[in-house]
Structures are given as structure tokens and as C-alpha cells.
Length: 144
Image (cartoon, rainbow, N blue to C red; front, top):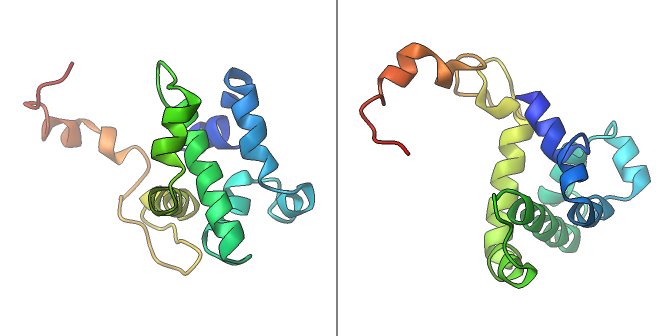
């Protein structure tokens, strides 16, 4: 949902919890580039991750996106060294960041939403996965 994306990727929440990590993530996108994308880091990163600004910027953006994610998406944050060893490798960071950003910029799979190439989403509506009918299908799966 858009509020969660804004909280995590647009400087409206997680940046206050992880200020130094946010500064590294935000520094990847110059102010004028961010402005051209309506102030959206997700859209600005998307241009870079699609290679629209060249391979070097694509690789750098992928590492920055992935390290941000790896630094902030755990209850107990790992060491900087362990983050870099897993999340900053070219192959992993390119795959991870491009898939995730594509999902976010393409309407997160919602039917009726299209990505930048007009490819439609695959979920019929927002919240569909959390509806009782869908949850009943996995109610026998053990959880913690």
C-alpha cells in the first residue's frame, strides 16, 4: 500500500529510525533528478534501475537500494560488514532492487494498474490477499 511505501522509501518514517542509512539511500539521487520524478525516490531509483541513466548508475542505485533494505528491514540490524557482504554484491543487488522497484512502480500487482510498459497487475484489488476467503486457504499453515 502507498502509505507503507511512503513510510519506508519516501522519507516519511523509516528515515527517522535509521537516519544515517537514510542519508546514504537519499544521497544516491541528486535533488534535480528527484524533482523531475515528482519528489519520489521510488520513481527516481526506478529510472536508474532500468538503466535509463547508464550501467554505472544502475549498479550504484541497485547497491544503494539493497543496502538500505538490508540495513532497515530487521528487528536487530546486522553489522555493516554483513550487510555489505550479502546485499551489495552486483548480482544480488541488481536482481533484488530491480524486482522490488518494478513491483512498487507497477501498482504492486493490482489489477487495473500498469507498469511503465502497460503490463497489468495480477491481484484483483488492494487488500485481496488479506481477505477472509484468501486467508482461509492457508489457515492450516503453522505460524509463530
